[in-house]
Amino acid sequence: MNDPAGGLSCDKIIARLADYVKMEVRIDDLDADKIESLGEELFYSWYSHHEYVIGSNELGSLILGVTVPASLSKFVREAKDCYAFQQYNAAYGLCRIIIEASVRDICFKKLLLPEGADNAIYTNKYWWRELSGKVSSGVLKDRLDGLYDELCTLIHGRKTVTREEARHAFGETLKLIQDLYTQHGL
Image: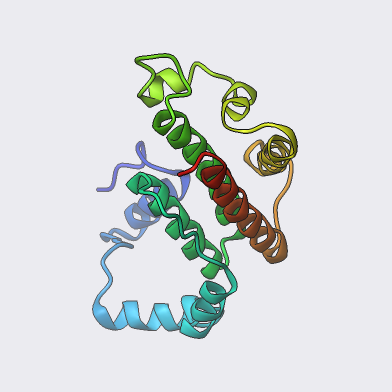
C-alpha cells in the first residue's frame, strides 16, 4: 500500500490511484526504450543540437589576463549554457551573480576591504552600493549600478526576459567585467 501522506500533491494522487487499482505504480521506473521515446516526444519536439550550437555562438566570451575564481568561470559557462538551452531568465539572473562575483574578486585582489575581509561572509556585510563604489567611479560606476539594478528586476520577480534581453544583458555584463578588471590593472 502506498503512503499518500508524504511527498508532493501529485505524488499523493498517484499513490491513491495505485491503492484504488490495487497495484504498485512507479512513475520513475523507465526503461531505455521509454526514455528514448519520451526524449524524442518531450525534448526533441522543441529543441535539438542545432539550437544549442546557434545559442552558444550568439554569446561572446570573457577573456581576461588574470586568474579568476573557478566559481566565476563556472557562472559564465552556466549562463552561456542556460542561454543556449533557451532558459533566458536563468541566463539573465546569472549575469547578476557574475557581476557580484567579479566585484568581490576585485575587492579581494586589490585589498579594497579592511584587513581580514578575505571571505564572502565579510563581504555580505556590505551593501551593493558600497562594494560597487570600492571598484568603480564615475561613468563606470553608473554603468555597473545601472546594469545591476536592471538585473535585479528579474531576481526580485518583477519581470521575465526575452532572448534578446538575455543576450544584451550577457554582452553588457562581459563588457563591464572586462572594464572593471582592466581599470584595476588586473
